Image 1: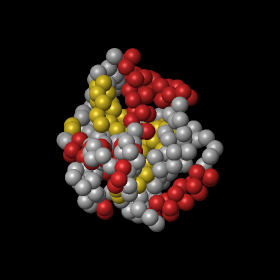
Image 2: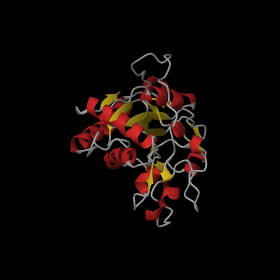
Image 3: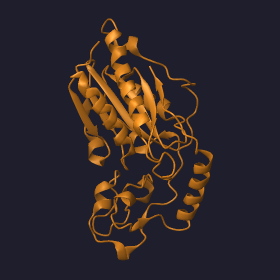
Amino acid sequence: MTPERISILYFSPTGGTRRVARMLLAALRSSRIPLEEINLTPFEARRKRRTFGPGDLVFVFVPSYYGRVALPMQNLNALSGEGALAVPVAVYGNRAYDDTLRELSGILNARGFVTTAAAAFIAQHSQCPELGAGRPDANDRARIEAFARDVLVKLDAATGNDPGTLAITLPGDENAPLRPYLPTPAAPVLAHPERCRHCGECTAHCPQDIIDPLSFAVTEPDECILCRACMAACPEGARDLPEPVRSAVAQRMAAIRDANLARKEPSVFL
């Protein structure tokens, strides 16, 4: 069962998930199957309706936030699977991906996709750069390339045209409650206004589209997912979390860092 088209979809506010996705995309180029890359990070991109079908193989990459699917990707109502094969991929910062894969697979299955494989890879932690620093690295790339090949081998070996025969069940109890998704303690602010040069990069990079293009303030703090995209995009380091939240988050991240210094390795499910 050779796919007629392979689509690579990803949500990646600070670029780590995109790097993993593009490594897999590069590995698939030799297959000569038509490829498409779809960046779902921009707000409007997630609202665009996209329909797939039985001839499609769709990889969906999301970062793990609080061990869950990042909030904007929990609603994929604009996607319609209609029997397409899906490969959910979680990208996490060397702590744990917890319920991310199980949740993403359930979301995709509910939209008419058939989960045929899954994986979890590591990238630099967006909140604590010391975790997963330099990843994905050369070893990760090798594992990503091998996973891409193994998925295609699995499909090539399949007989018949029923995508349901290629479905997998991920480890764990699919009916167990998901981990709590923690609320954002505070949205980033223009902490150093004297540094701001009004370039608008923060506004352009916000995946929730909630940063005012004139004042650069977050207009809907409750919609902020604390992805740090605006902070990472600022060339002058003008944005940060307000106190006392900044110090509290730093303290929490230090504890997570100290408990997760050992290198984690990718997990794949075929």
